[in-house]
Image 1 (cartoon, rainbow, N blue to C red):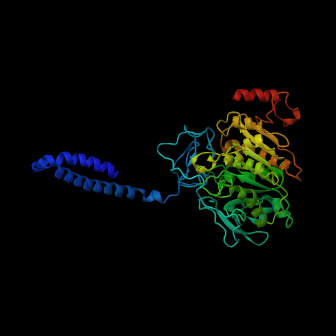
Image 2 (cartoon, rainbow, N blue to C red; image 1 turned 60 degrees about the horizontal axis):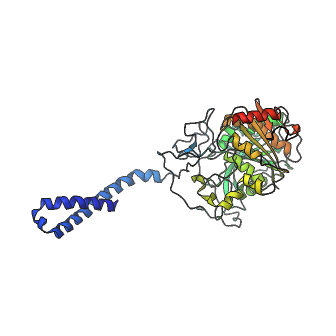
Image 3 (tube, one colour; image 1 turned 180 degrees about the vertical axis):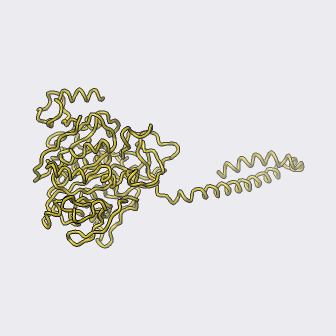
Length: 486
């Protein structure tokens, strides 16, 4: 700015000064020197004035937290946080995920979309180094100096203090807070889960089913991690996904096994989206979710876990499938609702996956093509008319890569979008899918939703008909419908 101002002012001064002072016309050197001096002074005044105006308008903005980037069609909108009306919005300055033409029909979701240009009214943040962020030492943090979770306006559901069965103080949402109803309805506890291996921490909602209180002190039951999308919140898993309600209904119909649900977002270093990955020289997010979270829950609630599973939507679906892909000895079952299967490359991941080796290790398709398949079960849930990088085509193509001993199925709705209106239809079946495949459970698989099919993605004649779950159409009908959807 100063250089441009000097040049402009010099030209003006060179033309005006000699014209105003006839004596200077005959002394060019003195005229030029005076002109340059005047130009510098005028430029300094101009720059100082602009700087003062700019600083006065940016003070409030500098106090706001950073806004995540929009490489996957995230339009930046500054909105207020209302946990009931808009529970997907994690911060007043954080974006909502909508398509370029507006929200998808049927409601707004919290997942990623195909790459689109960033909105001009909300420029992207400047490029960041590939592994910027906090460095976490490899050794466990001392128990008396844990890392506190990042400050974010999650966990806005009003809670009250209650005394748990072991005498500890629990913070429970008022809807579930009456201890007299715990043996019939269970309860939800708001807690912070500290990672002894990763040094990370995150707040979570932990749903304890009625059987938790009946089995004391021998609480033998599985733990299921439930992920929201990004940038999603844990509240929406209760208010919109209604996971505790779906689990209660499944228990009543003997289609879901008693399990502890750990509900939390997939970005422990929010707003940095690590895609549930151990970032080199950065936060070990995968270690936190795969090891620290279940260990902390088991320790805090005195559980003897009989198995581990994961379920989630969008980014949460990718993380759920990733837990069993990278840690199949612990996580043996997963459900991905409108998930994708390779790490995102938008600005929210801060360039971490520009490293081809790191990207490949976290690409679930690449792993199936180049590494032995793990002995796990995975359910993909989508709809024929769901488009994008996390839509029907992605799930159908990725299902073709699954090979023995891995078991893969696809729950396909006739109509659905990337939102909770669709996921609400899939969650009861997904929880039942988990229950029937965890060790030591004896429940019936829940019926598929209306106008839906469960398939292994095989073409006609390529698989035994028993590979298709009861209630779905024949393989030929499934293939024809798939071709029509494409």
